[in-house]
Amino acid sequence: MARREKTTLRALIEAGLRHVVRDRLRKSRFQLRDASFGGRGLQPDFRDGDWQRIREAAYEGHGG
Image 1 (cartoon, rainbow, N blue to C red):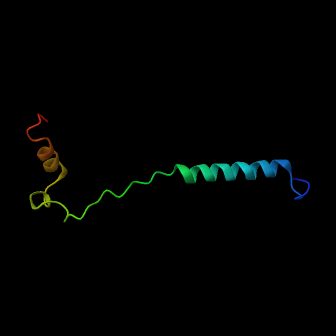
Image 2 (image 1 turned 90 degrees about the vertical axis):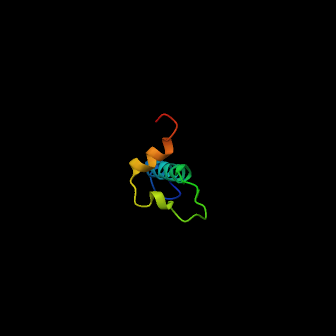
Image 3 (image 1 turned 120 degrees about the vertical axis):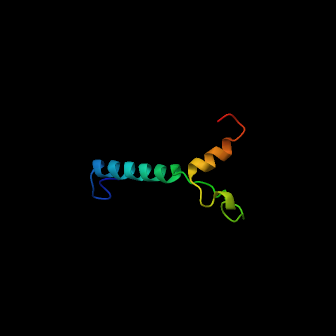
């Protein structure tokens, strides 16, 4: 094949490796599924709050 395409065996192997790596990267990309719903954002009690307030509310009554 290298002779037919007038290239070197090394060039063919490098091209093959690039192809395999690119293909595997394409398959392994993580894509987060869309878990949103038709809500209206944060509830009024939390709109002006910070993460500390949200965390406290989440753990309220659970010993956290």
